Image 1 (cartoon, helix red, strand yellow):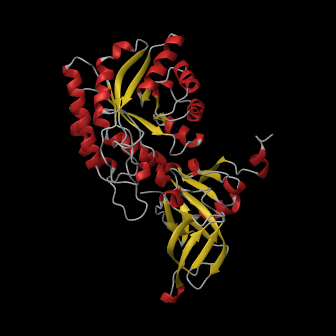
Image 2: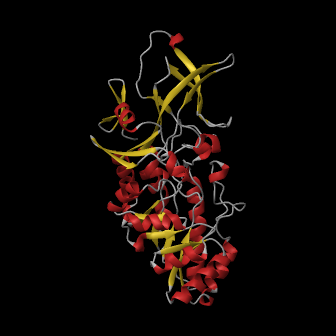
Image 3: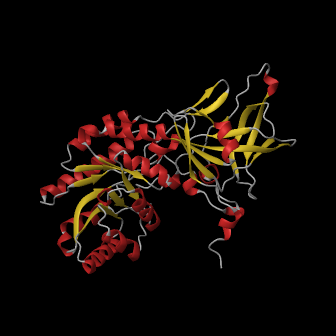
Length: 416
């Protein structure tokens, strides 16, 4: 699953003792395994090799330049959703022909920069956006490729904030409107409307909703082809789930085996946009226990990482496994105690885990919040004027600081 394992009761990332990393770089600290990152990318690439897709890593999951550069070096493209991610993408050295740009609120300025750089595809979310891209492309004298993001009206079994493919969401265009766009595409003289995009949500652990969505879209493509409208690219998005606790998500192989029969019947090139599947289990957030607070109703382990460092438990109510960096054996059950692991933020919603069992947990102990490589640092903030954490990449026995810890001076650098 990943390269975080115990050796002689000490938690390691690949061949590096995490306790030593915490001593050297301080806490809170994001630690990434390069091997896990790359091996998960290769698993997707290998599973879908019969159709040789373009695999674009979803930058919103983790946009650190070192992470993205490592994947680009392996041949990945990038899936972006903002002008800032576009800027970062340029800095990774990725071929502009491997950038796909999604998101419902692209500004005219962002669109202009992307067209000038000759990005591969815009995934278009509405008719007004289609018209704006057409206008900007005309002004620049460039014919721009676009894919229409279709909302297949499929409910995926995931958190309501990260399901994106059913009718009540802000994402995508319904089938009827999409058909009108394709049949009337000669109206958009500066666009090559040659692709379809779908993305039904995130952290989806079984193939069934993907298959339903793809079958609907495959039927739609066949209908268009009967009307002599060619679809050259189908982007099936991302959304593959990972193990956070007791989930049993499909492997890349199982997912590919389930969806390849549908995709092979579609006469189009395939794009995938995995993010969490590649980066999620490649990262952990290391934090130190500041105080053990005992109350009549429960025990709290107050740590130095908070919801500003990792907001997923507070925002989504989700579970991240929390492991002691130094494991202890126990001789009787009285040594096992239950704690809420909470941060220093002035919010009751500031917690990393509730009701967790530990052996003899004490002040100064290090804890590792697992599965934090996706939507961890990328969603972090300076709330409560807290400097953001440092990030370290581990490769074998080597470590590299890939983002220094912010200072108090960094907090006010842009203020006037």
